[in-house]
Length: 59
Image 1 (cartoon, rainbow, N blue to C red):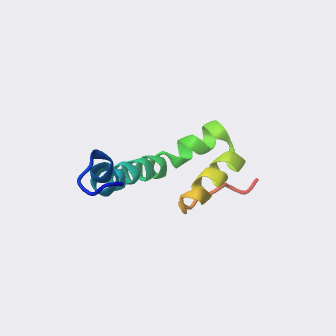
Image 2: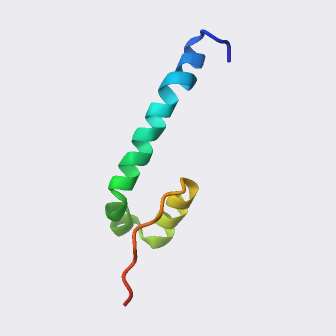
């Protein structure tokens, strides 16, 4: 990536903001994702981002 190019600007300035918004949204809605997609999928997704999954109540 060339310094000063659009790609450089995007990676340097915009990508951190985009990733922060994605992680924040996933964290705020993790219980909804859990209910909709199930425990295994949500745990896999959240482990990739190091976000603790929602607590599963004991039966």
